[in-house]
Image (tube, rainbow, N blue to C red):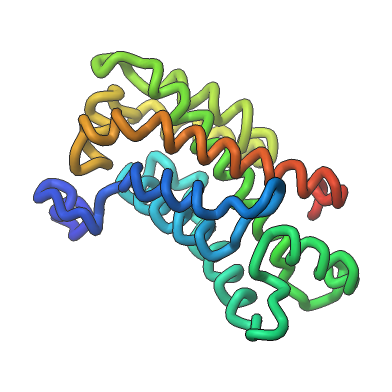
Length: 220
């Protein structure tokens, strides 16, 4: 038995999706009226990574490169100093890379482009869990997963990836089994899910507006 599977069965919180933590982190990431703090966002995404990992190969279509995207942003964030903080928030990063014309610089790994991929992934997670919240415990999650995927990430994936993703979704469990698989305390998870979705949505909407303002939704 794999380490992740064993830890899940024994209730090891290190291998559980902590909905309350994600809710708090997304809430703490909000700065002022229109900005998002990078550090809290990335820490929240680390928890979302646990969700992907606990779901196994079913979510490989979204989790396959999330780790590398998170690490790219960590690396860029590490270049900040006490006096120069280009990557401290989403707004400062987008403005810096755009003003310095780094988005088209050969060999430069763009934080704005990288974040856009995570942003699209967050859209899928939100839409999927929002729909899961409305199901009964004995209802299968496959249909809501397909709908959420088609409405979000599927729009940005190639035909082959979409085909593989939809095939993998047939292995999706019921809502009750899904929560048991990824959460240590199912009842607590149900209690905190609405607040997590609320804070996740606010974060998503702010990020969406920033990319719209800077006209960066079509970054290659």
